[in-house]
Image (cartoon, rainbow, N blue to C red; front, side):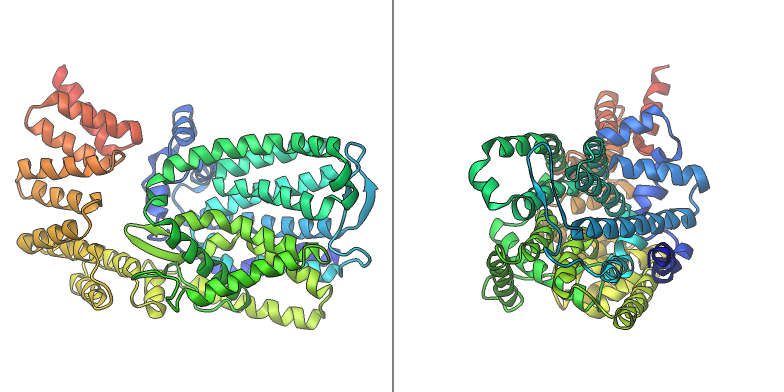
Length: 567
């Protein structure tokens, strides 16, 4: 089995996701993170400083950009090597999951010389079948829920953070079994995980759960205050790093977090919690967007069953705490790793209840429960399950093949999705398929009259020269969502292109008032000030734009024009 393991973990993920090697860049985020990101095109101090001092624009992911730099160094903007890197990282993660499950399943009755902790395994008296652990790892390696993280290049942040997350945990488990050097390796890996994506702070919760549920015995809980103090000191570096990176993360996510009420977050969190478990068991109808449109309330039948099931899940975790702590630990892992994603359910005045790649870390908790409950599985049955999962993953990977595929997939499942309609209409507009783009938008109004639909209808009108109709749609979008800077910028851009400079300035100013980090709006505002010979105001806008993105082509060009005027 050991000799067979590594080849399986190389071959099967390539079968599941290998078609992505021949895909291009996806229309969602890949463009501004990779294709249009000049900072990845050279590895130097200025670019590295930029990555480590800015957001993406919401997430703090400097190591992800560094990984893109190496991809660019190898093959510039050839998508193949970017996709290959994603698959390789996922393979490494799958192998680390197997190692972690193996470490957790090993019963070790030796006590640590520091605090006399007992390292319990997944079974107290009987070892877990090694094939079951390999089977669980293969589920992780080929599961369709992981398609988005692997196939979407922007999903690199989840893969890379997961790599260092799992590495940190496996070093920590080595440490508590007596390898003292592994402790600082675990801290180092934890730092790298946080620099890849702040979701890695959940590792602290996993370590605490492992200590509370698995390590401590009743005598230690009752009598050993000194042991508890040593444990607290052991966790201190993880706590400090977590606090720092949570503060950093909130700086980029403040507006998104505040966009949905607390009660709505709780209700949607229940739906999300149950949904991911369902899709783990039956991974069909997966898509890039899972919309939850309209009013959200406890009595809503889209919400109420999930609330009930989520409460039952928590009750099971509590009920099994003493007799089956590994079930509680697995459920706890799942909930702890999922919890931060509940803050990110709203964007652009829309609510979505799930994102496939958000299950990348939580899934391991479900695998822990699976390993504990089943203890063994017949190879034939396991093989059939793996083959089915691979087939589903191949199908899901193929939906990413074309720029419009992911959005058409969403609309086939959720025709009411505003986000998918906007995404598809944008692609069609860029392909000069204006009639089809407008049809996609107007069809969406039947489900929900949303400001984004009006704004994108305005884009189609503007592209076809119907300026009056475009202005009407942009103003309608502003009336429906006056706190959104996008329609103000769109209207300003329309006036800018049609020679109505004063009106354009007023709308650009409103856009940057609503969003201080709106780089392109500041650059365009600076250009209009330059045309009016208001050099000081222009310089102020260009400088503020460069504070947010020093690689902005428009802002840098504006500053060069100012310098030329001063010569």
